[in-house]
Length: 475
Ligand SMILES: Nc1ncnc2c1ncn2[C@@H]1O[C@H](COP(=O)(O)OP(=O)(O)OP(=O)(O)O)[C@@H](O)[C@H]1O
Ligand SMILES: [Mg+2]
Image (cartoon, rainbow, N blue to C red; front, top):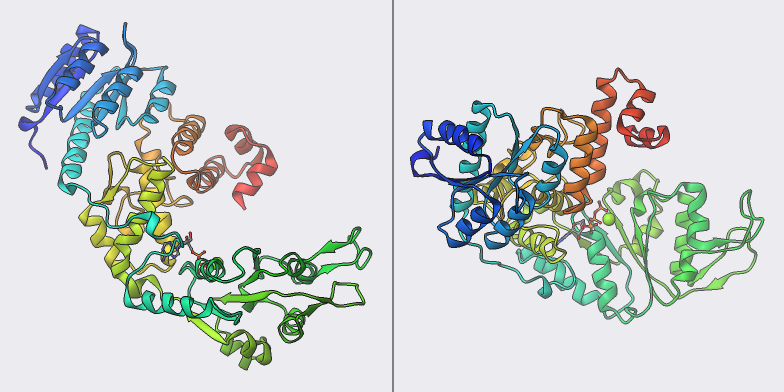
């Protein structure tokens, strides 16, 4: 724990009574309190320095208001921790103010215990941030135009093979666990090939129902089946001259496999319901995380197609086998987020690095990327700390669908309702990472649904959603 006696708190409020009572509460614990009686004088004190460890800032003041003061303070010192004080009824403003980077907020009238616990939390967060130290970027995103970061020996092998297969039109099979970067590799092969100025089309074979995949790939003639009211051009035709990426090829029906074989052998396709054939010049790249050899043995994957596709194989190593790349990937993600102005976070603490190094990463790079994006949304300073991590990594943020949606933890208003929570999340998320939104909404919908005794109508009403929208969230 940090020592309160070495901690300075700046208290900005134009109400002398509030300053008096808060100062009394804080000094009982030994905190050194400096008072400012207006937004202007508070901002001036911050500009003059030295920076206080923590600021309590009133939102509604005559002259410069708290929100404006907060913006000035944060532009002077982006790392400054500020706790907003707000009267009951203006929680909305406080919630909005979180968007400008407030650390937390507290409602008046104050509960002394709450004031002290919040002060302790702020002081601890400041100590954690200082412990992280200065940041030296280890990667420059511009060096990774491919988006593939990695210098582990296993990745160097991957890069080598990519280099070898770009000159020819050879078919490449990319295998590996989910989230290891198979699609990224496919795109990289295409970008470096002589087909780079022609289309790259990715088709997810697992996502398209068996009865539609052939029409999707090869097109169909008008009237060839119920619903085929117009003629349709398939992906292979659209991709003529380019590269097609057949993702999740292990999920392709046997009948369709036969037709892919024909493209590979004869370079021709036939539209569904059509009689003639069309010549196409398309390079095929394929990916799967299934055991195709096992499928060949079980006769669920054509052996001849397997050999045709598997001319060159690139096996993407799971992230746990290239732990040394994790810090670089973390850096890369954070710098990309910062470039899109989605985060102020530029680093992770050494403890977080240690947890990352121990984690098994079943979802591989995609999982790491998600952890970074989500934690960056929650982090309050310029570093991701252990507390910002999801619980399964040792942090305190519960997953949506679990007990509490993320970010709700810092919403301490007594009148916390689903609406204010949703509002809060919208505000904070739109400013940072829209990736989070569906996850959080889903968790919230599920919780509300349970709380309201599985009453759909009541839940929809409570959340301000239509029933179909709610159903979608609950599915
Ligand atoms: N080496 C890497 N460096 C940086 N980002 C990466 C790397 N590998 C993967 N990613 C990122 O991780 C995510 C998952 O990558 P990708 O979609 O290529 O994986 P995949 O193997 O196709 O996964 P799935 O099997 O689930 O389809 C993407 O957002 C991608 O940009
Ligand atoms: Mg993929």
